[in-house]
Length: 185
Ligand code: ADP
Figure 1 (cartoon, helix red, strand yellow):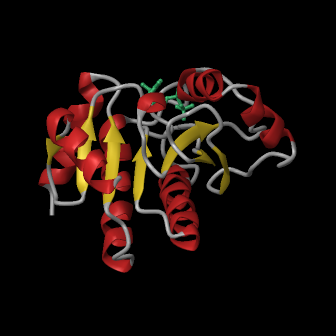
Figure 2: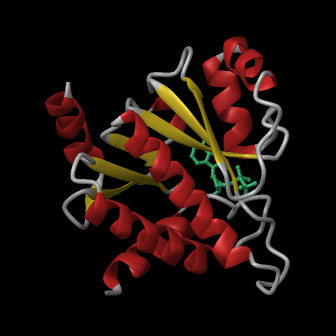
């Protein structure tokens, strides 16, 4: 299964670091061990990637989310993937951008760390992330990408079980932001 997955990504992804990949497609179509949802504190669905994930997963996802009683900003919760090709959905709540002086960088970094902590606990190997907080929540794309890459490099160094981290760039600005962050040491 891992071989099939990697073959697929060879066609669509831009290779960067060996276990970090960028792609431009809808995250709901990705067959990873887990896809990450940029959720809100209620975990009951919303717009953007959250809405797309709930639509594609079907009502089972919302029913499971109802039992979780929400999620504080910076933390993460895991559910099954239901009708999605991904086995699991990791829901994390990014910070709303308020100019950068309200602890946003630390909260965004905490989102990635919370996701990677669940990933390690469950022994997952392939994970796809959207650009958390950079849509409706307004986080500047380049700064967000820098945090995503920094925390991912840390996780890759600590968890040799990780096979592939995919950053789903839904638009060209996002892809450029990740490319820039990956070019930095
Ligand atoms: P947030 O509220 O955390 O900002 P959004 O869903 O508004 O979350 O946006 C987060 C990122 O997800 C944005 O870069 C947006 O372009 C992207 N996005 C929206 N829909 C999808 C999708 N179906 N697949 C992948 N990324 C998506």
